[in-house]
Image (cartoon, rainbow, N blue to C red; front, top):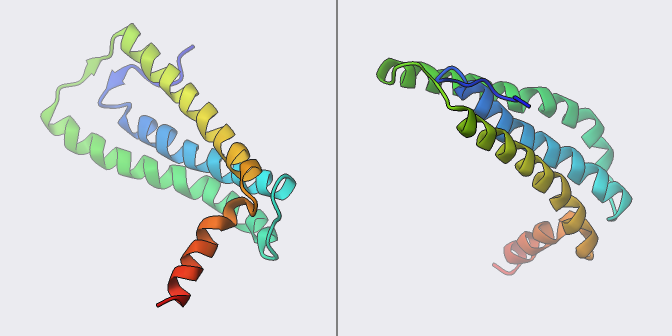
Length: 131
């Protein structure tokens, strides 16, 4: 199965928006839903229904634009070429594995902590109050 194009450097925007943008979106949605079902959601948890769809479009779009700029710069110095089939398979398998890890991390983290995702926020608040 071919997820990304095998033409380099033309595949840079797709790789960047795929690996970074999609992984951040999957993490955000999974953390949002996992905390709702496993953890104890905060009073402002419902705002996620408003902001997560916006971030779902915004984050991969920004990553794609950054990737297009990188493609433009790299394209000036590196000639266009076709990536080997084996390299493309490794990229696709890495993408699938990263999505699996990013999907399951919030579930495990939220179920193994007492307060869900709020532990780091409580730690920061305690650090600020002790100053």
